[in-house]
Figure 1 (tube, rainbow, N blue to C red):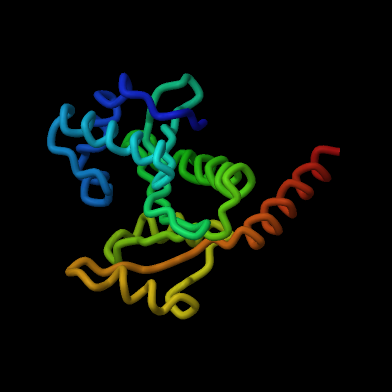
Figure 2 (cartoon, rainbow, N blue to C red):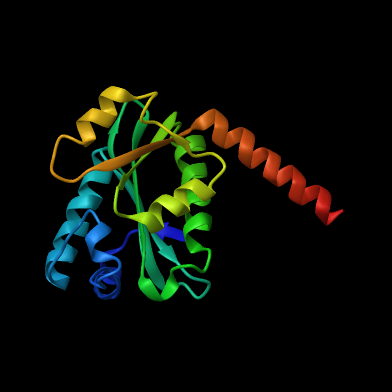
Length: 182
């Protein structure tokens, strides 16, 4: 489901990122495969320096279908960014990738909070976030951060995933699945 980012996959990912239903909502707005390669190299360097963590989302056959990353890491928190190529949208990859990545962030990297900054017009991402039982609205609880992310022309919703709520929710889900299997 997730793997370390590798430079050889950037051409495949660029073909997916440039689709009109994906491109407006990605952080790395590359206009060519070469530019996307360069941006990926920069992101890998940021990961080495502890400023980002990024993974490639793969399908059942190991084909790259999108990416999931955390940016602007500070004080055991950061902003989640995810995109899935258009042919793979709506097939459940987003939730599975988020679950795996959040487990890595919270229990291997010891994050306390993961924030989601979703453009107001991005209804698909907002709906996907609200499907997750561990996502909460953060506009009231983090007003300074909400104001900061909305200083520019583009306006955003702010959500967060607290580690304790993620743990409680996913542990409960796992217990339910185990009971159903018996």
